Image (tube, rainbow, N blue to C red; front, side, top):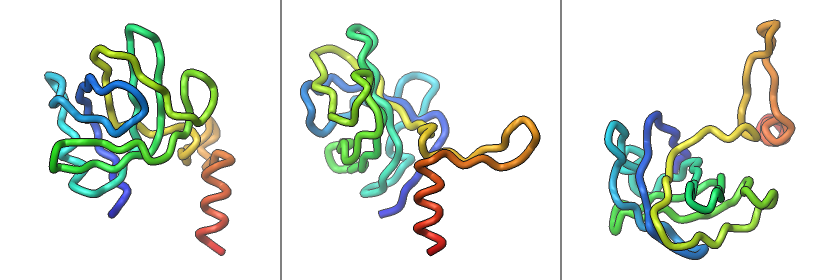
Length: 126
């Protein structure tokens, strides 16, 4: 299982509650989560535009049943890391790069690492 991040991956779901999402297919002009590959993990966002709620996390795509599990929640519209209990209706689900996991260049062209990424990098480098 690898962490895979791809561009322009967006589907919809009508899954309710806090469980694994059943994906309903790619939105026009976008790719499906199949691009992530079976049993691979990815960063995701779920957005319910009717109720204005969202969740950003790490999930695992499963091609059998076309599902995305919600393994680790990084941030929610409630300001915590507890899974959102989504209401009925259609929600957008897409691949994203969370700010807390980013390494980027500042205005001077120097690399910057977010606090969460710095901790992970320090552990990886020993």
